[in-house]
Structure formats: C-alpha cells, structure tokens
Image: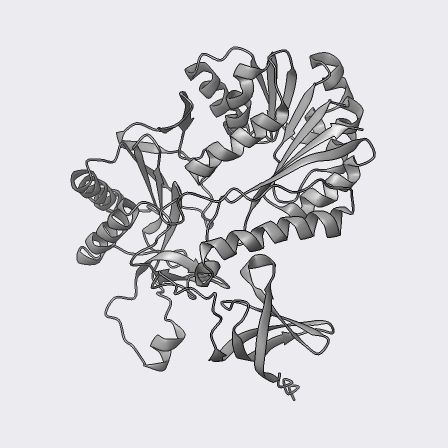
Length: 472
C-alpha cells in the first residue's frame, strides 16, 4: 500500500520581506525561511507550502491580503506562466537596487575578502525589447494554463509556437507577444504560425519525435540587420518542398530579413552546433557594431544578448584594464573575440583563448574585418591551453581579462593566473557567487580595487559584475 503523502501547511497572512536568488522572494515564518515566486517585499499573502526541508521551504502565494506599495503591474500577458521576466512586478529602480544588494551580499558573504566601496549598478537604458536574440520552440502540445484547465477551455488548434514551460519539456506556451525583442520578432513568429496552421504543417511531438517544424531563432542587430533561422525535421522529399514553400512565404512577407537560414535537424535533441546551416536568402551572417568596430555574428555565434549594455560592459572592462598601449593582454574565455578585439587598439598585443573552435574562427574573422593585426587566438580547454609552458612561450601578461561561464574558473586556471602574476586582473562574471569564490582564491596575491555591476537583463535576477584586481 502506497504511503500517504504528508499534507503540507498553509501559512496565513505572511509578509514578504526580501528578494532572493533566481527571481524568488523571501518570507520568514518563525525560524523557517520560505522562498516564493511572483511576489515582492511588502506583499501580505497566504502561502501554500509545496516543498519543505529542515530550514527552508518553497511555497506559492494563493491569496493576497495586501499588495506592496512598491509593486508594479506586469506588462506581459504571459507573465507568471512562461517562466521568464519574473521581476515584472518590481519597478525597474527596485530591481537594480536588489541586484546591487545581490552582488554585495555574494562578494562579502562568500568571498570574505576586503572590498572597496562597490560602484552603483549601471542600469539598462532599454528595459523592454532589449534582446538581440530569441529562440522559439514548436510543439504539437500546447500548454494550458491553470485558469484554462479550470474553465475547460478547448482550442481547435493544439499546435503552438513559443517557449518551453519550466518542468515540461514537451509542452510549449503559445506566445502572442513577447516584450524581450524588437516587435518584428513577434510579427515573424505569428506569421509563420498562421501560415503553418492554414496549410496544416505538422509541429514536432517532442516525445515521439514526429513532426516537421521544430525551432526558430530570430537575431536582430544594432546595424538594423535581421537573421531568421528555421529548424525542421525532414524525412520525406515532399516535406522539403513544403518547407521551402514556407521559407519563400517568409522571404516574401519580410523583405527586411537580411539573412534567412534553415537547418535540417533529424536528431532527438535541439542542439544545432553539429549541424549544417543552409542559406535560403541573403547572407549567412549579420553584423554588430561598436565604436566603429564591426563584429560578424553567425547563426551559432555567441554575442551578448543586450547590445547596448554589452557596450557599457566592455567599456568598463577596458577602463579597468588601464591600458596605455604597451601591454600584453590575455583574454580568457574570449568567445568570438569581442573583448579581445575591443581592447586591442589600446594594447601592444592581445591573446584570446576559448573552448569552442568555431567561436575562435569567428574571432579571427572579426580581427581581419577590422584590420586588427595585434591579436592571437587559441581554441581548446582553458586549463589545457593556459599552462606555464604557454606563458613561457608567448610572454607573461601585464593584464588578464577573464569572462568565464557561470561555473567560474577551474582551480588549474586560477593557479596559472597566480603563476603568471599580471599587474592587473579584470574579472567579468555573470554569476557573482562563483566569482566571489574565485576572488577568495586569488586573494593570496591580489586585492580588489574596484567593483562595477552592470545590469544586462531587466526583469530577471541575472546581473553581470566586473571586478578589478591588482597585485598586493
């Protein structure tokens, strides 16, 4: 006989007191810390506990008794369902206040090192339509909201294109309007959806892997260029004919698309890095521009998704590097070489290292496009390339710039940085928690001289943070 599931408590009239990581807020009930999504400090709510541990619980608000005076009205019709932009209920000034606090708390609590005064966060000039890239998923299983299920809403069309629902890999929330990217993105997605409905195109069943339409990526750029990538599964010749009819329709409806591409993906996963990209119309790339420098962005290229804030982030990085023209700079985790090429005019030489070979090829192309001749690029695992032998061969850097993934730097990489003993380290991070851990490791030789948070992603809890370290 199955064990009866323990009933979890309802906590009544609880005041939300703070904001936590991952876009959740915090309440305290006696000694229990409760994490709650979609509420803000000052809300008084009834909380239904969904998961309980010894010292904390996760809950959802089931009734509001009082609304916080700082609460904002969400502007998106999909808020609270799609899983993104969880901070729409916080005014932007409050969002950046809490992001500032998040950076300071992480650096002080985890890093446990001496810190200077942390500079006020650089907010984003655009808080809507600020992204330059979005990816949408097609599915034959439309997600029904709790309200739609309750009202027994029936849709004639259960195919959907939009975003995956958190925790339901095979179901997709049908997106009507997303506020993250220029509205051209919404028009293209909805036009493709309507054409597919009208002509009975099959949408992928993510469990059985049957169906044609899989994914769509839209990339916009500060130069006004526009890339659309349609990804499909093709197993029969007539499907290819149908797919090309769809591509031609998109080309005719949106002449502003400068790069219309397609990918055939017959695998059981959505990754495209190992697949060929085909040009249907236009170029196989678009360009981003920054201070007269042009950066080629291909369908698989990484580029910071908030172009305006990327410029601010790179300017802070360059300022912190304190370059005078005679320095040798190492740029670790260089991606497509954006930072390497951006700082190259102020340095003697810049060496960029990156794990992804395709990204390094993009970096070399970007250097060539801009007539930059004082850069070198290497592809491979950071801890394997950045060794004492490498430094002995290419020179001891005056400055190291490092922009690792969310997990931070490998211990071996930290050890080699300490061996190299650059005068300055500029550490760019999208995760202040792992950054704080690494700063503690570097503390044996380096002191933190300056900290500058930069908000790249309004309405989310994510923040970029730039730290300048100098030899003690």
